[in-house]
Image 1 (cartoon, rainbow, N blue to C red):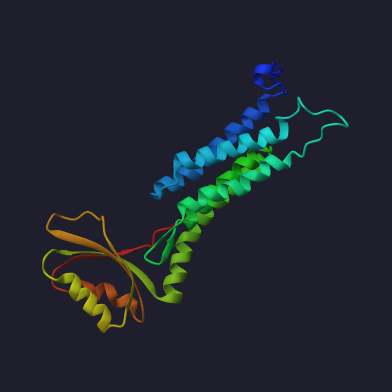
Image 2 (image 1 turned 135 degrees about the vertical axis):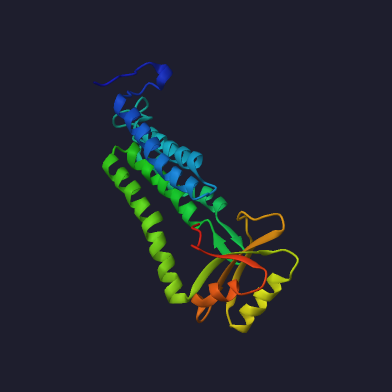
Length: 239
């Protein structure tokens, strides 16, 4: 049953329950995207994704139905796609703010793409294409979870890249010895970061990303260094 709102207070255009369903569908679907990003510890998480998706659905609904009270046959003709088209270009500014470059490496591309994806899901829901919007959410989890694992495995095999969390005793020159070992084995250190892993007050944690021949032996080589407490193999973090 349709709920018609013709009062000028509501914009003068006829609105119905289906519009609300489409708006809430955009909110629910992008909530799933936001939950995945939040679990991954990304900056654009639950709040950002749901706001982007719901707002995109609203803008598209406005573009489709928001000007019905000013249209006059043969006099005023509006293209309903013009307002909606600005979502695609406008969301690029938000994505650009997420992408950062740190130590020569680009971070945040996947999260920025997820924001753009949430906008597209919101637009699809606002257009009434709920089946397509739901399918994209399903495909997001295939890409973000299943493909993430496949990508890391292929990267490690093809490029010989591996990432370690290394915990060692402080004040014993362990890091210097680890770096010396990398040079001795011709392993290229592409990234070195302080590690927020759980460590005691007299221990230090670092994250090292290495590449090179026989890199699979790095764990055993590092574990043999005096003062090393633990060497943990880590999956590369997604953007």
